[in-house]
Length: 327
Image (cartoon, rainbow, N blue to C red; front, side, top):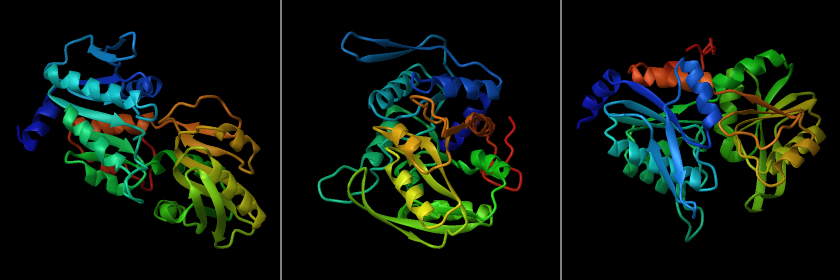
């Protein structure tokens, strides 16, 4: 079937939303914003842990949106792949995988000998399973979209974060990149708010461990917001906050779309110089923290799903003078 025929079929067919086990709460919020209910999907498990997703209702000829983030463990990814395969074999007309947090995206190149390009492998697995389209949010690097031969809707977290930052009414607002690789993302926020930009140049000797960090730029008297796509152990963020305060910053906040928060992340954040860490609900928090503020991406995803199904522009959902998302 040609791609153009897929578009016609996608718009004409009934739309159904389903959720994997890991992203159930976010999926329910998306369905509420969309003014519908999640479809019935059961995941059976054998005694050894092997999974068997089962659609408990007919999906023949339907346009499916399957919502599931894919963090570790790999069971979350495997469940998504099996669900897509089940949908394909149950004669779904069009399958869109909605992956709020795209796991394994950090391994997007060979930065040393004899390592995998895991993001590329995951992209191929999703396509081989039978997905016709991918919807995700704030990939680790924009070029990951090139790993796919299917359409990719790459949503931007700025739409979710901007209203909250506006409400803070911070003077001398300055955005910081936690490393050289994140400059493009931080610069976009600085441009959006007509604010200054500084860079925290870090040096690692091994993963999740910082050997040193230098601040490039002036933060004297500034209210700084560090911007990143995800926060894992929070070591980089907490170290950056400490150095920025030493350099004369008035306050330091962190803004990260995906709260991976592994290891001692929660303890690191609580002990840090950060006023707060602002995140989205693309991943559920393992526990509550007085320093972590969660903003919902559900309205954005609901609107994107509607626009996709109705073949309307997704780019209209990107940041503009009016960042309010209504469904």
